[in-house]
Length: 259
Length: 242
Image (cartoon, rainbow over all chains, first blue to last red; front, top):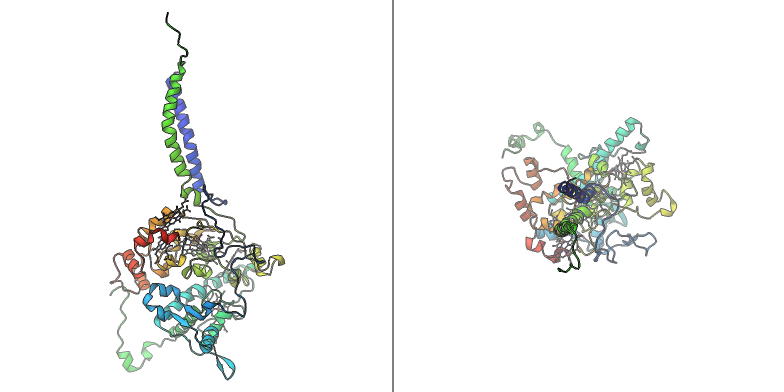
């Protein structure tokens, strides 16, 4: 074999071999791994303090975050600040927090009750000023927490309910003991006072679970306001049945996007 | 008589010199590229997909059922930490549906209806996205500024098992902090990972505007509306290391 051809032969082989590590890395990039990343220099990546939801060997239940002790109140329970909104609208800060300065406000906002001659009675009105912004907030929260079961329109046919109906039709044992969620627009809920609806969200009812750990107090009241708004929206009076003066002064709705 | 040299390089050493010279030029360059590629954050950090104690699927719950991210990650809008859901959250549905499923054994153990010795312990979820402890990160700040989960976690609603989708190194964070405008969207679409922003009527409704008054540069408009701090503050070392 001539020397030059042998040399080029070696070069090409070496060049190809040099590409192999790149190829392996490229493969590794596109493959999922179950081993965590390794740091070449550990620096201070892992520091001996607890972050939220980290495990701890100090406590029997293995949690660093201590659960709420029944029958006690946290400092923050006395002031509810709607932080997300307050961040975005610094000027509205004052409107967004409610200070529970006395026992009466405390009972009504936290438990949805007032004391009437020594007995708790469910509130018939939402104890927080209901503004458009408040109802909108209720809509957002309703669509997050109630929609899976009660549906966007509150009629009780949310996505999970529909999934269960499907399982039932297929005769799957997974369908379990699912109870169709109540229709929030029906008479059953219309007769509930605001305090009771608040209590349903807070403590659950029959087969509906409690939502007090998932939804902060103010947002629960916002949801109550939105449930009421949903009910009102279903009691629409046809235009023909409106009083004469109002009917004749109605303007046609602009078509969306034309303004 | 000419003296015999003490040592003569044999003929093949010519060839060796050439090899040594060339490889001393090529090999360092090669190693630089190899290490830069092999040890980049993109190679080391992305695609970590630990095995979880419960075969919980985001593709089913968040994708097919369309449950909002906040139903489970409740703190994402309010706190620095996004919070994994407590066992009770799963039981909201799973006390009634698929209640006896084998795959949910670890959840039942934690709730107290399974293995008795594990009652009250957390489900041992494995953390996927993990920043070093010297970095401060805040979910509420980002989510309320209109940055979607999609930007940082990828299409979670199509993942059967969550994996890390972005490198989370400092350069990656700064890349956005230098120019956040293109990533912003209306705040109420943050958890909608399929959002495209093409529907003008819907967009106007999200922002409380009409189609005619819709700003031509959405990013710049949202930057102002959500009071996003200046680039100088966002790229200050103290913002993330304090």
